Length: 302
Ligand SMILES: [Mg+2]
Image 1 (cartoon, rainbow, N blue to C red):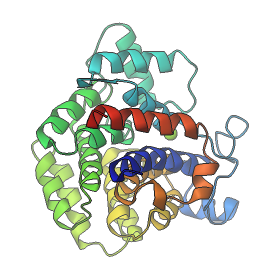
Image 2 (image 1 turned 45 degrees about the horizontal axis):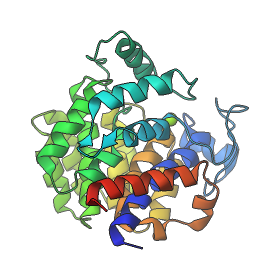
Image 3 (image 1 turned 120 degrees about the horizontal axis):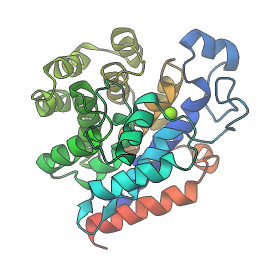
């Protein structure tokens, strides 16, 4: 398989696997997860708010919104007007696990209002992986497109800085870069959007483990918590599997932590380094592979 296609499939399947692995643990604390499930290292049926609604291997709004992003590319690249239509289509289809900001923001989009909501949550950070894949060599363009796609729902500096940070690290991973230097470069990339967020990103420098990151940043819904934690997990672990298990057992917003980590780590390690068991058990894996191939063909004109 072409190395780049391995990265595209790795990132998109990785995101969705993280979402599905983290779905049953969302909003439990680390201790509650240990008590209810032991260690999560494969898909399990949910014992949280998704009980009776979703089953082992099924994903949530993180993947749904990523699919909406993936459906919004044409030969010219990402198209925000198509994205608006895709978000509304998703909203009208009785989605599972839709966050409060996305709900409000899409209701505004239906009214023709594209100003989004002033919300610090990670609802855009979790979906921007494909933008990092497509615009991996063009950081100015990546920034412009990511800001526009984020503001439609999350018109807030911290939410935008979070989405930019995830898109940045996905782009670095496509370029095969996993380096301490990326921390500084990411902080520079976002500092004009949110200086506070760039300062948080720089703190990753001093951390020795993913667990230290969860202590320092926390793993909740605000982008300024879960985004630095997901990035630190990537930088402080050595395999796709180890980082993922760490994320989905951390407690808090585990499905988004898994999604953001999976988008970055999947792009770096490639689909061949994702455990086969996880790919085999994932809902709609064929659709996600097809969407990865479509994005790859558009990007490389193949
Ligand atoms: Mg979710």
